[in-house]
Image: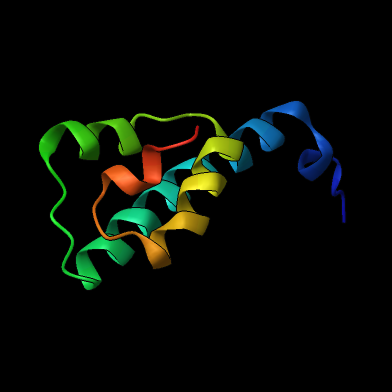
Length: 75
């Protein structure tokens, strides 16, 4: 079985894009589950972010956020 595709740059790019989309959706789901209002501008900021490190930073703040703006402080 040839697994070279999984080591290719194209696969890495697809994996990274999937990770970014998944993290953004996870943030939104967690905020919604906690009953936190997500204004359209914040929703767009989260869903259009393509920085995995920044999304990771936001997702670690999600459990303690009182408002969506708590994610964006101290970036």
